[in-house]
Length: 231
Image (cartoon, rainbow, N blue to C red; front, side):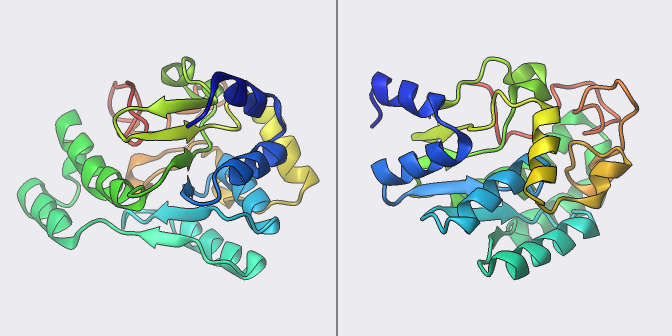
């Protein structure tokens, strides 16, 4: 779909310019998944303020912080555009809880990954059906697993292009942009929650800790849930 020259051109553009360019090249089939984190709030702001033809959606796992719902509501009110919400299948959740326990994800990495698959990956797969380009708020600075990512690349497993427009932004640049553009974000960030997932699976980090250290804080793993698996 994209030539090498087109990819190189998009990668040199600003955030806003790159999103406009994508929409010009692909009038339909572009989607953006937001977890309502700071990076995602920046991208949401650009999409909604410019009324770009990009579907914006989020995943409600059923175990989020209240602050997530408050911010989602505020987004809908501010931009007058609703973010689509995808939920896990009730049968999947019921089966997991009845077999593994309400907090069964604490008992093993396998259980935790199964919970993430049920509550995040399967709803994501539904949301991405028919998509040609999937925009994310991933940054290489967030974890070692993301250092090898490219801004725009083919995702063979999902048969679409994945675009990470903030890939090379630093966290300081994120904070500066949020302040300059008066973008709403989760109050949790000011309390040490830099990377925020489900409430039971997230803790605040200490100064100097890796940004992902607060995710699945009780285990030693790659700190990924399967949404952005390595190829």
